[in-house]
Length: 305
Image (cartoon, rainbow, N blue to C red; front, side, top):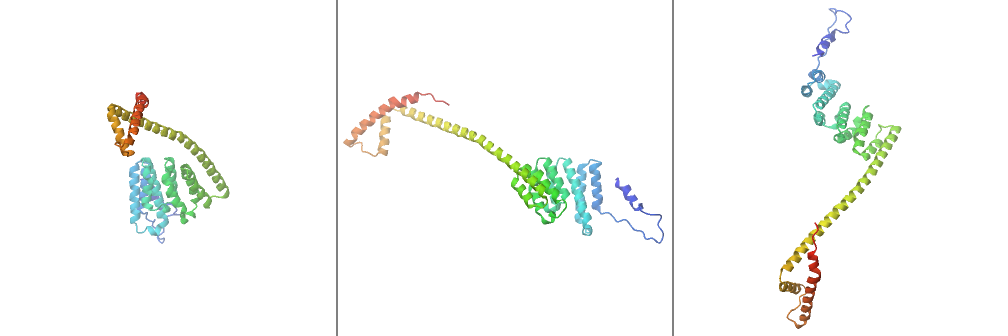
């Protein structure tokens, strides 16, 4: 590995001359296994282009960090190593076209979005924004920005602006963008005014586009209703023609008898009563007239599909 020569030469640099017998020998601090694996993973990624092996080496380094009992003594170094491992792992996943796994892969080591290093969060935002999937980062970045510990970091301002430009505005989350700009101290007055103006412009464009789409939908809805109404009319016409055809297929006396039975059920008059004879005679005349003048022309009309 290319780091072997530099490692072996490191103790020799900075020495003014040969060691005297009275001078104590200061041994170089031993590097942790995670650092060695990090260098190996970077070498596999950049030099050998073995992205799968680089990712597996990063995962081995993470496991070694979890098992290292002395990691608490070098907390700062451990955080830097973890961040570097994430950077190498993210690049390896992206090179293997497995960018959808990046966020879940990173969160399995940090558990919660608030603990993500700023550099790792920035890479995730840029990656998902480039792949046209900024929505995957919406909740993650929002949670990170709301954490009080992160608000004191020097990278907070840049990440808030990146979240605004790469996530909120492309997704049309204008209310969330206004809340971020108005409630965050990351933006100075000039930036706040410019950003609010950009948000108002985006809202005007959004409101201008939506009425047009609604008006375009109204004719479609009207056409759909008209088509359904005409289909219903045609269905009723077929049912009516079928009923008329059925009536005319019956003998006249049977038709008259069916009408009479209907009148008995609906009007409830006594056909044996002498006062009902004029009504029955009139009913027969009406039935003749309806059959001759109304039903026959309708039945002869062609049915239009």
